[in-house]
Image (cartoon, rainbow, N blue to C red):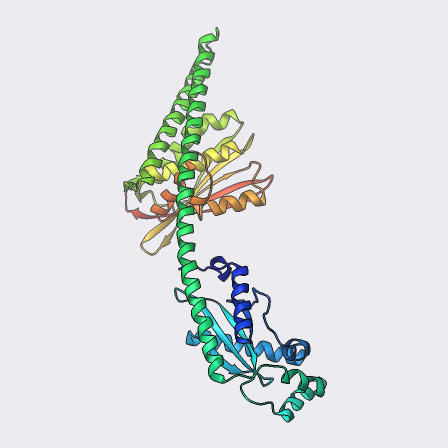
Length: 414
């Protein structure tokens, strides 16, 4: 079970009402703390002996905190309520709040006596803490005296109440989380469909506009370049369709890898060729850098790797004008595999701190983030290939996407 907080399961007001009722019924003090010992409620039924005198002194407060800490640890260790004598002569209890073997917090309290007051002992404590002896005696006589067994029974009862409430609340919490996940998934599907529709309409319109321009122009000097642009828009349109099919397969659990021998240099060069004209339109140049010791032939899914790299190249082009897109490829030996690293960097506007945080979180928990067509599949594809992405960026200087994918190097004479 992932870590949750006590207040995730039970509302603070509910906890307060439980301990208030418990304190009125038993005559004992009560307080609820979280797993770190921090109070989450206001104290109920606290005595003047503890709150007005003992805990108002530096030494007394330190001893009380130490007692609370030890009792909480003891209750956690035993997994049930414990009753103990505090340093000032009263009897206290600690009842752990547990769910699914996870410690969420404790009910603490007591501040009662189980034996008659021994005045000399109370006077000694008062002198040690620097408290007026007569006032301290008067305060302790006002505390309630019950049997030790009554304290144990009350603490056990409170512990049982906490267990039942926590279990019920946990089941409701899990149901709510599952409902929210389904809602996010449905919203993600709807967002994808809308985004896909907008993207496809945009690609087709660009395609039509380019073709219309070619028909209307009397001068056909740049026919080759315009045809290249037309073909590029057509490839982008097909990519959008492919992304839609890919997304449908992934959400249906049909993702598969097609691992074969391939030349990583050829894959990266084909990416540059595909985006060369688009980069040129914004005054950008795509540069390639390959490490000398990079294996020539690798075993993996070249198509998927190309798909991933293309997404980052497209993003870099979109965020850069009159600059450079640099694709660096290098590798390092890890056990029997080669950790292939592909860096896609730009000299563009960069990301703000908030944008960088969102981007990093997207690649950690993709299901809770909105993304454009194609980007949604990236984290899933990377996870399927045991890959990761690191993102670094400086505003005004550019962004670097560092893709790491383990691949098997293949001996080759090529």
